[in-house]
Length: 378
Image (cartoon, rainbow, N blue to C red; front, side, top):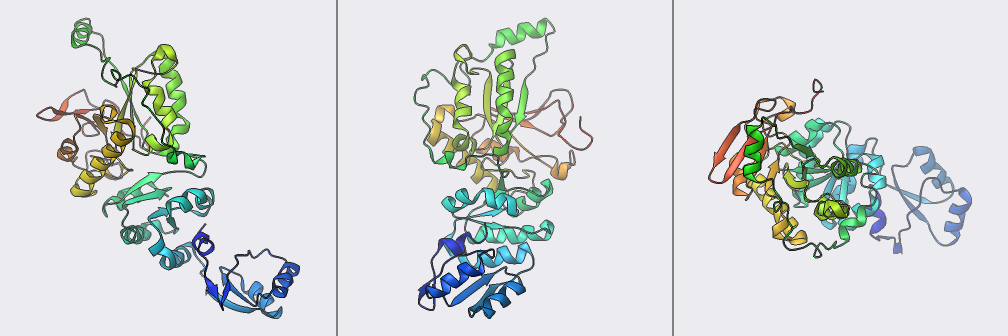
């Protein structure tokens, strides 16, 4: 994958166009190339034995790069081509291979190192170089995301086959057929019904699903099936990328349940940094970046689906629990309010009885009765 820029951009070698070949090329094929006038072969990540073999065959050998680790190799490629690229990914070799088409379309450069803790500031610096705060890839450990947050960067998390079809975000999926009177709040349970249920000691329950990663939507359809069968109310906290990569799934939330959809039982929320995942607590994702990301995420959703369908609710990842340490961080409630949201479900005071954690004007923050996933969590 890291060779993609070198193959994608033609360059001159001694006045001739460079042809990309692999180490597995046979001696017979090499002789054929020599007959056609190829005299010089530039090598990248090529064993010494192979280079000696090329020299014996009469080729001139130029070593472009012979790094022994992923970090120095991917940085070398990035340094050569960064002016032609618009994004950065943190991707191991397998992930790189599967996402070649996407990376080529979006002009995303892959970086990778086994020593991820020391590599975080380097990844952030390359993201600064392409002026893009969104980093695609697969985290080696969740703390990688937390460390990136300190530099004002967020991650869009993917796997090698999740999602399998990466070109879907190029489709302008229409939702214009949705009836104007339909939105996620037109069929809320009336207050008088809720009050009556409370009087009868009925406990109102709703489930809130954290689904920031695009890779999460391999399982979410099964949850939708459960909603259709049980008619249970849930919230689905997602990033803006879902509207591009899984529009047909979100479409289901606007199709009446009697017609095979899930409306009005699922309400989308914006999660984490809106454009991707970050630790939202004070001292991690900077305030100005946090606000910028949330506003941009809402703008993108409104552009694709219309402002009336843009989420009103917000759900974080680590607003009060950096490194999964409960109550160790302080949420930035004011940022979410300023971004235009109406309500916020926080990890602060999670696992306790319901309470209003923060309230200002028409903006309200509620705690959740479940605890965040961790080693000790059920």
